[in-house]
Length: 430
Image (cartoon, rainbow, N blue to C red):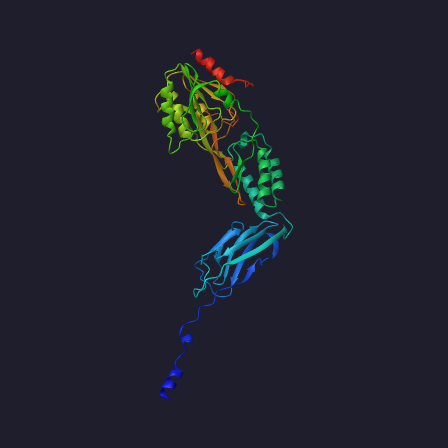
């Protein structure tokens, strides 16, 4: 009897072991789940039915704009972030995706993987343009007003251009539309160095049509003893007594030290009467490599240009650009072939080469580019790339990116390689 009474007073096994805590649930979202809401700025809110550990969260953005205010806990049941929604778009994001357990209740129970989803309609609440594109347009205009180095050199009615640009960009429906119109407007400035980036895609704004003054197949038919030294360098003979070296890009790799490659090639070609360096296909690359090559043809340091920062409408103190004769000297006459597709770093190479004692350039004016650019984040998935540093020649004349003329202009022809022929004719007289 006593035993039975004692047993009846013992707690059940089920009550000894605590029950598993219930999993938290999402009880409210704003915008509401699967609802259509106006486009424009919005505070996205997720509310839970129990207190949550506000020290952590895990989410996958999915198709949602980058938050304008980072996700944060407002209290232990409400998590929120701010964003700007595009019109006519379906958005979604996932809480606790996969194995992630960042959303967890105060009693340690994780939220099940939860997808929040909503859409936007065609227009904003006030039937007005989306604010973020207005802000982006104004940021772009302000950057061009304050820090665009070549503003004074452009023949542009800036007041009219700015008003027209605002009128066309303010109504942009999304970032793609904004980028398309911005590129068209920036093209009116006629600057080769201004580009617009949409997410990861970088697009030129102004690109004049040019006709190359070289045809690789034709040239190969006129030279002999051709040897490929690397992916961008080829050595040959333009004639029995004139060497030929073409450099398509100023580039080194882990496998090839191009500076040493140039030195070795010049050593092998020095036995001839002269040398032709063909950079007509070269569009730039590593400035140090270009200057290292040019250093083979200098007796003294060559000042080939100046740069000066441009900020808040003010030009800073100029800094000189120089190349040094740090490599073994090549003492024979050199003809350099240039053309309308040359730009950037390759133009620096040509500027130095024009100061060489026994160097002459042949071909056509270069493509032209203003030099180093700065990136301005416009805040709507787009970025403006523009020059904020003035580039000048050694005498201080501003280089406007209009192209560098050769010592001897050689018109292109439908047959043969007239630029190569002109260079050979000159070398025969040296």
